[in-house]
Amino acid sequence: MHHDKEEIVCPNCGTQAFGNYCYECGQQTHLHRDTLWGMILHFFEHYFHYDNKFWKTMRTLLFKPGELTLAYWRQQRMRYISPVSLYIFISALYFGCMILFLPLAEKKGIEIGKKMAVHVPQQPRKARIAVSPIPIKVSSSKFQDPAVLMEVSERIAHMLPKLFFFLIPMTAFILQLLFLKRKEIYYVDHLIFSIHFHSFYFFLGTLTTLINLLPASELNMIIGLATAVLSFLYFRQALQVVYQISGVRATWYTFVFGFAYIIVLIPLIGIAFYYAITHLH
Image (cartoon, rainbow, N blue to C red; front, side, top):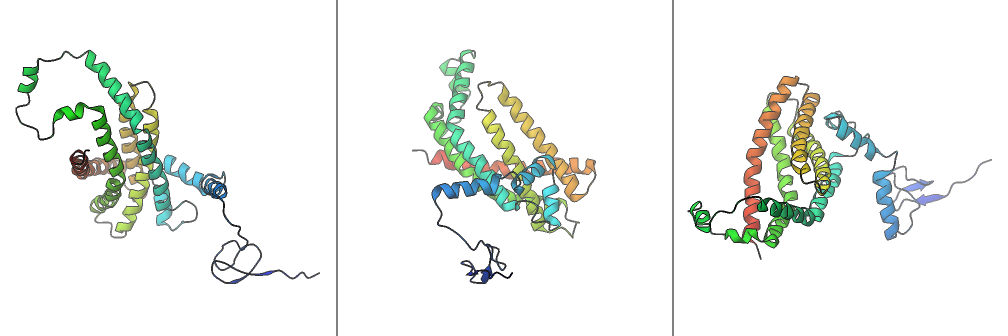
């Protein structure tokens, strides 16, 4: 028995469609007015559904260095979240946590500093002045004020997203120089590698930021060292997997890259710090 299907005009592209989805653009044909709660549920559904590719992307990013980049190079685009979307989500999480928990971290650091100061013998005032004969334009006493330190830290934290936005293409440029003879690899390919590495680094940074809030202050140095080692090993493994090079060469390139990265990073941090201290209230 034949049943006529209802003909619908797709609200997105205007195509005559049948059923719940438009065959031309893929949008649902029956849509209802959104509510705030509905939008929130849709967001979490989109990113955190068990079968969603978000979890598959995160597992691959964290435990299979370089595989996301290779998949993108091979045009396997539907398996994982796009590099830019992944970076935006993780970087927003990282910088959001940093800015949100910065006051707590600063308070913890000040308390640790006060405890350490109790055990450090104070020099006479004349001796303290003598070791710093060069006049400093910005009064050093201002930086003993927790409120000033907080303001400087917050300004730098707000500038970090812009700083890393500049560092990602610079990372790709460094990689292009390292693999200059690989004519089959283009700059945009290195850029995808850079985005995936920074996504991993920011996720690691998010965990580090949260762990540093724990009362055990002696963990801070250990966590910082562990983060540096994990980043080094991850980058080395990703290089070996993506660029198909030996382990020895990947290790050497990681050291060279790290040195070049620091050379680029230091002046940028200096600029951010200068901007922060020259715009104090």
